[in-house]
Length: 206
Image (cartoon, rainbow, N blue to C red; front, side, top):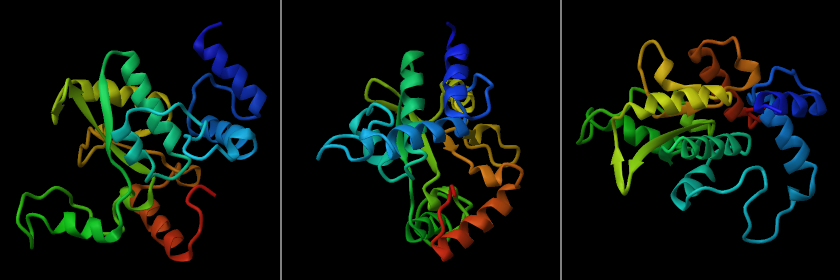
């Protein structure tokens, strides 16, 4: 049985669209079946949820800041990269509005270089659905490497949106899990809805 046939069999069992690709709908169904409804819903103290085996400690610390639906995707990306011989870590996750404001101020009203064009509420990091990765060789972080393109392809394959494929501001280390309700929305529209949901304390992936 090929991996595509295996995924298709899992999708058929879960009652989601059968296409042989483990996209967001499939991962969400697995999460609902195993994590929320199965024995792993209440893990022992100090253990990691069984939605995906844990990765390196630095990545896990960042992954813990993401929404539960995004965490298995981030772990899957790290593990798929490792299977290709590429070492990556998740180095940035959720940011508060205050943290985003401080980043936006860099190079404008605060010392340093400009690192973002997103004001508070205008970055997907502010809603726990986005994360950035870093490529490492040994203990050395590589801010630029052709390996980011390879990781981008892996991310797209598992259902993540990759910043390296954006048409305006290309952001190769960036990945995000777009909610199903935003599938046909422009980024600006999705962010407006995310801000509204934050204001109303509504679930992002509901």
